[in-house]
Length: 215
Length: 175
Image 1: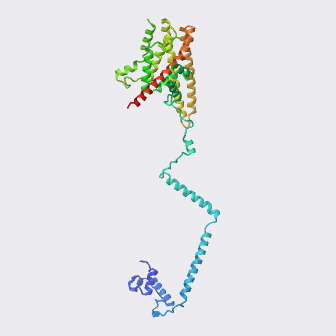
Image 2: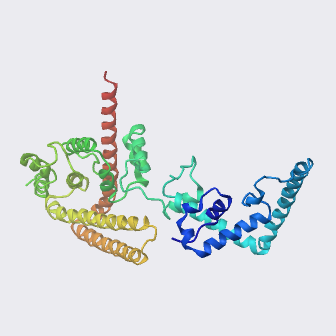
Image 3: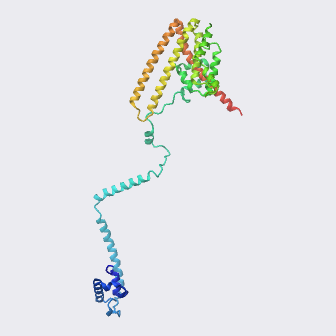
């Protein structure tokens, strides 16, 4: 076991604990010496550890003492507070040194927050696409319509001609549209039903005399 | 033998409408009344061949020689168009990439030039073969005939679309 703690020594000196309850004291000269010195000191100041002063004849302080003590403590606290603040501010490094450090720390904190929160926080979808993002995602050229797309303007034009013009007018108007192989492209655009209709038309045409006539 | 019978015989040989019926008999994928674009193109060829005989006033002897040459011209044009379309589709796919491969684009453009050049040469040879069968007036008529045929075919395609649209409208108007 180690030496007696100061609290235990004080308890022994003040008689709160009996010496026989601490067996270590009988074996340790150092602790006995420490207890004796403590008792001697308490006897010098007239404390309760001195059996000679057990009558408790301690003079009472002046009636103003507690008021003065209270005001002095208050002033001391205020003064220490002011000094403490000044010292805290002075204790910090100069702003020229502190600012870059603070800036770097703030940047690191922001970066950490952004990095940690990015996967978990879904990106808000803006009401209108950002122009920069839009241009970045678009290919360099807009995709062209495949050959024979149903919304091909040339075919729409042909359809309009077919419903609004007669055969002869249609032939004249189609002069600028038709080209060798254009039929193959047009046939690909037809639906199944339209191809069946075209088949019927062709069969009708082939059973009749030449629609072109002798030129 | 009558020229029209020759034409019919040739049309049967080139089989402009046979595949669909054969497939229907064999229970193949397309429906019995379905017709593919390729079959329609063959029907157009047959239609052109029939019309040419009357438009150009070909004799039976001329028609027998004209027929395979005209068919060769039609095949040459179609083959060139198919090759051209294939390369154009490849170019289109390349251009849709973020970083188009310029080497592949250059190759495709070169292919396109070669197809155009070969197509023109083949068509020129086919025309020369046809012209050998026809006299000068018939040669001139043949040029006009070709343009008229293209317009006629386009008009038929448009008519087919219009008829189908009208049929759909009538069906929608029925209660």
